[in-house]
Length: 215
Image (cartoon, rainbow, N blue to C red; front, side, top):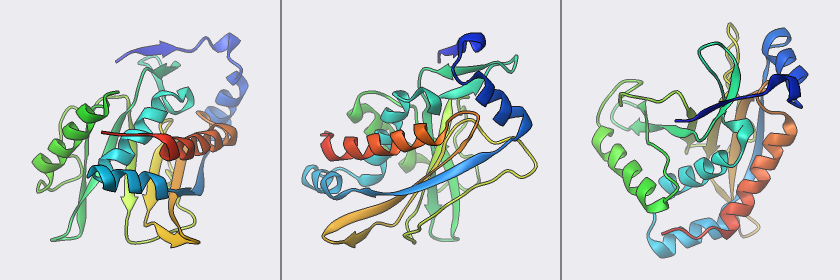
């Protein structure tokens, strides 16, 4: 894990970070619909599961998006991690609870895919919030609400400071005009990223889903 401290005095977002980190401690949520028609068809042809494949795509793009890799060191100085590892949820149908675990990101799709499937298989029946030890500092959250196709989704920490890492939630896809459309929501501290950065991330993710070939 590499952490690069930001040169504050020459940082274009110096005043923005300070304002939203210390004066108005706010986060925001942005929800858009992704067209997953081509992506899902490609996965079906190759026999690849959607969940780990989609988490890989999001993680791959986060590695390319520095604003989504922000953190603080032990001296509370902001910087960027070299990558972020996904922390995701698994649902327990027997009691309608969930647990979360994490898988180390790897640029090689097949490596990440099989590691994530292995983690899910090992911990699928383990109950509790955190079921896999050793969660690294450089993680982000991603989960699914497969029972609902929503138009907005928000998380909040009223008594604290918003997390610098993104919290990503996607929902049930639906068919519209012959296309499979899936809600995708990003929650993030305004200190880490502005609307421009999050909009670019979602637009870039759509491009990736249309073009990427996995397996």
